[in-house]
Length: 457
Picture 1: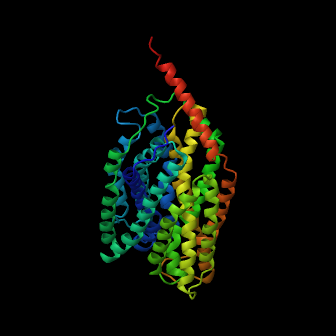
Picture 2: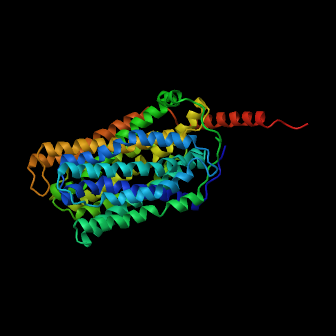
Picture 3: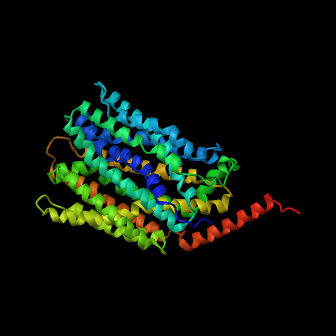
């Protein structure tokens, strides 16, 4: 069993992958809905459907990519070559989303953005799934995986901060029109391309599985469904993602129409993200010697309080009120964001006991699919509700419509956080159970090696 600490440079560079992925995802989650309604001029209902249609493609591609990387036997590894294969299409398709074609028909306009979004989702899958499946390849240690997930989350949050502080302000500085957004999109696409070659250089695979898996497709997926730990983790993660993506998609509209101070958006998000990053080492310290699900529940309490403050906040209230609630929400959100990715690596170890094969790719593929689709479904429903109640961009909404926007931004996410915490309370794969699994795997591998390599005379 590997217990050595990973070198600092590997953790830093490996974390850049989540930085790249999150820069793109935050731009599409938080900025794209505003861009489609305010710059492109798309109706709310259609704007909400764009990510849902685009991410629905991942129902096939994420899981397929996970299975493909599990079954790959290239000399360079099962995962790492895909980082180079998918990096350029990932960046290029991201840029195309910020191109406004001269299309007059709303239907054709929707078809263009949904198609480009789907191509982006596919290309991101090619790099994201193998990248995320590398985490359990790099270390077996329960706490070291949390440390590696923390580096990923910090890098991811910094990607969020970069996107929010630079992308829209850059487009506005360039004129705020369609060509300005295209130029800003090209610069951001270049940024998300840069990390993948260094990641390929510094990471490695321990190659415990050098032959393709022998399980058929039915058994392959059947064991996944039968894994109780993974079923609970998927539920925990899906509800958590909806609670994250709903506010992210609606914050710009919330600060513009509910609070009436759109300039507060960047400031508040900056405070939120800084508090998230600062809290992560504290959570990591608290997680040592404790179950990850316990830490997740603790963090959810602060997250819920911050969202409730957001729901009742009034434009005339002192700015300090929203600052305090934002800090508490950021502290709570930080552990809830980083821990599930460490937990899915532990599930892959438990699965090896059942299947006899390493299937990190499959588990990460399903996990990533849930990350994308759950949030997209929630956002699509929210935007259709706003369209149904008569929310029109650029017009002064009625008071009832503003309360609908408040609820979708904060109150509904609170319910999903609570559901996520409830599922975490029954999560069975804790620290002690994981130690037992690693001991079983170590004995199994020693036995297999003794049979494969007979002793000499």
